[in-house]
Image (cartoon, rainbow, N blue to C red; front, side, top):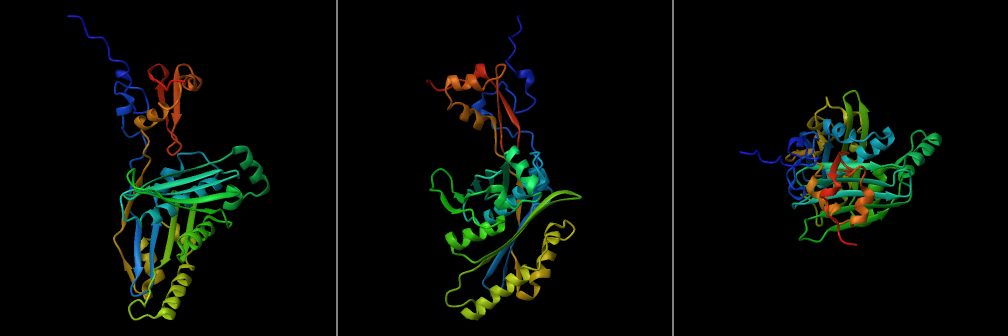
Length: 334
């Protein structure tokens, strides 16, 4: 009996980034990225009978896994890490299945900063830099702030509840010198919520670490517990003053458990810890998604994108290239 002809690509199935016998639109396999979960990545808390709730975010080794996917300048990496920690903290407040994203677009050396996190804690993000403009900026300012990196533009916070629900998006102009100040502008103008935000990201002996402490004032019309309005104001100011004593080193210290850190700050203010939430490496790219993108291009565009018969699409989040055989792709008609 004659042997059956070999199945195309069957011997090359070593990674979902490479062509295989599985049709691209069906291939949802996870690319070769870290399978990493931080069980207590977000620690929500509140202060009993006080108008204060908050979240302590500590990415731990997840920060290094996410940030080292790109070979960026440390200043850019630190900004991306702050965005990841902030987004993880804000996503933890979601009351529905979906995702929360932060996007900054400007005319500076870092024209795009993006981070998003699902309600389940799948986190991803990246910062896109213009190398020439960044080098020119660094030559004159070795440690530029976020305003210098992003330039003029806008900051958008988006809640996506899925294809059947409308997205909620708040957009503000980039104002302030740090991402912390820019976030404060958003909450004051769009959400009208009093907040205190502390963001930190740095490369430590254990690798990159990123963290955030977020306080929000809870609306309390008519009083909270036995507190009248003046007492609530005092309680909020006290909580903010205590939070302001926190240092970057404490926030990023792996050896200092989050619960102990929070007790150092708020033990005398009625600290109550809520259920911790996990964070995970959350890039959601796949051949199926990228092949769908390619299907939207015309035949001439696909020809132009191909090199030696292959089109390579690189995920901006995980920086992994997916290879597609041009001969197998069918674009839209011109």
